[in-house]
Image (cartoon, rainbow, N blue to C red; front, top):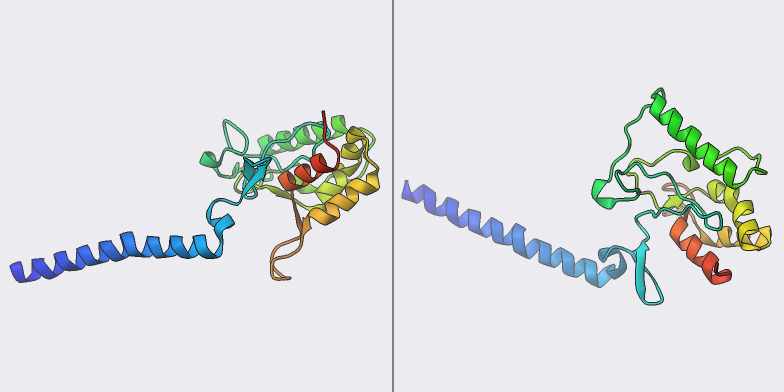
Length: 193
């Protein structure tokens, strides 16, 4: 029995050291050396202070800011500790009510906009934390933001174009606009007091 117990114990300790200490230290060191921003949460700073992450959405509801996707996290929107979708199916009345509420908010914010509302402005993402919207969703809001800030529509549209990220590796995903970065660029262009 002792002949079987000793090798098992040695193997257990060796694998614990390798997978529990050596591997995490090596992977962390490589991540910090090669991708320091991503390894530390893709933190966005303003005036030297962290204000958010490029990976987690934030709630914007003022008319002079671009609005992101709805958050399905509860009790607080964009709560990274409660990441998850709403799991509401397309025939669920709660989803229909959510969409109607967001459509009403968008219409109240800009009653003159008669363009079709992009779907990502009225539905939440799978994680409930999506920090990005489609360029169409940003374009839909451009008139409201330009009017609220006293900017020319062309200036805001140009800012959207500059803030749009293309497909990853040219083929993966869809073009997208990070809402927090776009709103920060707006604040640099013309601060709101």
